Image 1 (cartoon, one colour):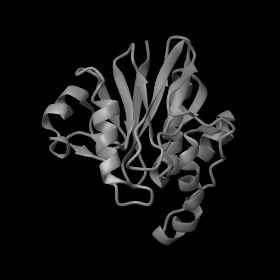
Image 2 (cartoon, helix red, strand yellow):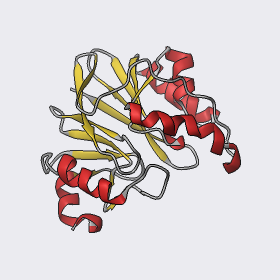
Image 3 (spheres, one colour):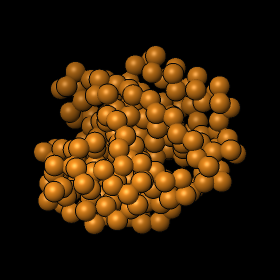
Image 4 (cartoon, one colour):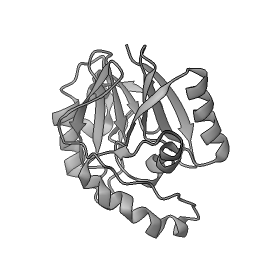
Length: 212
């Protein structure tokens, strides 16, 4: 069984997730640590739970979701894994972060790129990959089928969807991605998004104003 710990980090109030199972293995998803105290909070949790991080995953590569990639690499020697279509998004960050008054430690680039479909594994657990482009060019979600939840990144939110006015965004594509690739999941599947509170697939199918 996968346990989930959520942290809310950085000026964008981004949700960082640590997934772990009974083996002690862990996956760090979208590390958004920006301030030293946020870095310390993540390390403290991992040490207290005696976890061994095995995967660093990015749903996509906007700045707020990769602030902590370098820190994770420095501490656990994990390079990020994401879809190759997000590489151009990652490589663009050093060009715009200073203009926003933000410091950015250069993320390592993947040795392993993730496909549109398939699974990633850590410990005794597996996450299914779901391709949901639109907020960004090659956004992935991570579905824990047996545990009934989805790490949704910035695709689907409580009564909202990801913004599509950033480079590589496409509103029609995002709507199509959600309807065809996420709304086929069970109603009770819990969605843990990149910002804000969790929701469920069934609730959003019925009540999300962008998808009626």
